[in-house]
Image (cartoon, rainbow, N blue to C red; front, side, top):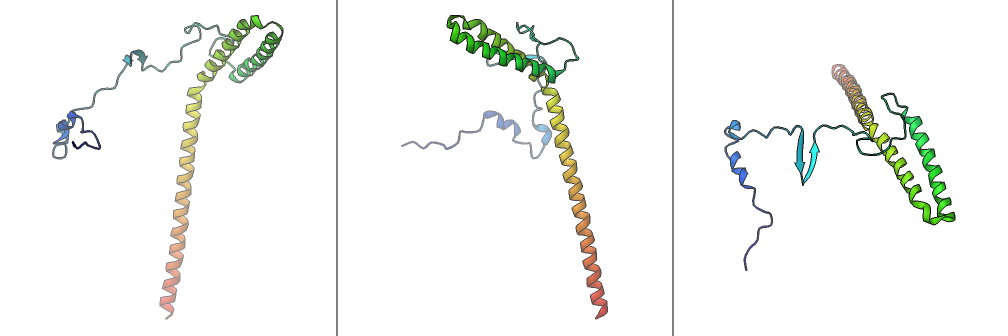
Length: 169
């Protein structure tokens, strides 16, 4: 009966790092970061993190174009329009079931626009989340400093009491 290893052997490139402890410069440099376009599992990707416009995706845009979009208002309007179209779809399904396809396409278009608007807010969300995390870290550090100061004062008070007790005897 042949014995089998529980874990697979290390990959062969581990030998490139055998003298790393004695000479850290002997190890090869890591590969440079990928820039631009690359292929992964047969699909093309890019390192440029840009949200393509709806027109580039072949979808009609239902909200105004331009840099000064009132996201809150536009999301609210699209949500109301979505509710209206869903009610119309329910009505069509009851009255004229064969004509539902156009309503489903309209609902799909509204969802695509809602999704694109929400994705447009992702950088702002990430920035706000990072600011919140940093503010929490600052708050925790200030609390830690205050705790250290309070404990130092308490230790100094105890030392003075102990010295007073020693001097009194």
